Image (cartoon, rainbow, N blue to C red; front, top):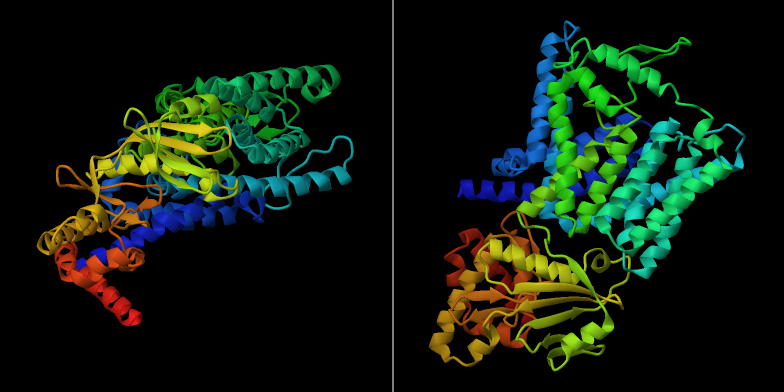
Length: 618
């Protein structure tokens, strides 16, 4: 009994950290630099709300670590980190800073945490990014207004009065979120969203230009080219055209923006760095060595202003191999998985980071700061998406646009199964497959971020991985009016409500006991089907139970809590016929079947809820 209570408690802790704390930690990592007073606060946010919770989650369930290490990006990062730490053996410092050992661990937790979040709570990923981008947009717009009011020739916008204290570093974040809004402009089919994304992109690009930094401009060009390559639609041509037009405009009317500061000593810095690299080309100078580059006019810099050169300087060619593998593998897998839009976003952010890293940066493993937006955050996102894709938490199926005339042809001679005031909702097509229509939701609702047709398809695939029969998904479509459509092969059989109506009392008792066992299996596997009732459970021709109408479902990391189990029952009690069969006439059979799978405590809570409901009803 004590062991079961301990397991129940650890499950609740795991769910709370995974479903609630990690999303908060990620949104703060993405947005905190825009409103905190210094980077130390960002470090505390990340360590307390993302890195340490992720470490705790991996300790609670070591099997999750196995899933992380199935991802080549996580393996490559581990090899890179191990070699970086191993390089401390030839460190010029006699006593290496202990903080150096923490940095790879905290960065690795970013990879693992993104994998957990995208597997168990991937429906929050788009709202998290949108919220962070909205914060960045508002702060950037306010800073632009203040900058223009006090503008004098030669001024460069910093981006704030706190953590963002350098024009070049600020430009990394402005460019990062410029790529996000560019991705929305390139992929969104909702006109309301485009009305927001277009001006938002203009504001963020204006913020980049106001910093006077040229590095993010090069990076944005690379991001536009990459985004055009992976999307390959009409908007790609518009983006390329806009890029060419912008380049010509700057070259003709504002050439001083490109040429007035020359090369900013980049060639001199790279030449000096290459000379230092030649001293230890294979093993590097060690993770904690110092790099001092003294320019001709006396100024001393401590970065080569190139990520690649920095990696080779500190950990040599041996360390550079896993580092460059991470970049190549992330881009390669993103191209393969481009049917999933989140891969397009993550890889576009990485392309931007690669472009910026050509002439900026140099450290290899740092605490959370602006450089994370160029490398570690995009890489961790791609790794997390790969992990979730491998665990079948994300859809592999592309969403196709369907013209009205094609849709009419598809639905010709179809039989209407279900309809509402707006028209048909479920149709049986001529080939026997079903077509389900989900009406458009408002642009700011969860149904806009994660269309219900895609939830239906994703839930169906995940149920199948759990061994629970569900419809086979055939295609996903997007209609011109904003509706989304899923076509699927229905399961053969009758709804449980129909089956119970045709049985006598003794056979009904046996079937309800089996249903109690099935319901307990759902709960123990973490399936929270909010719309669970006898009309959404199918008794298949082979005698097994299956689920239909799957859009309103979540699959949680652990067995359901007692409160969620009780809430599931309360929904079924809303239907008079279900209530009569399950909770009045044959409740003992239902509880017996439930108890054969669930714990005595969970069964007792179910009994308690039913008795409470019965007393309230009388």
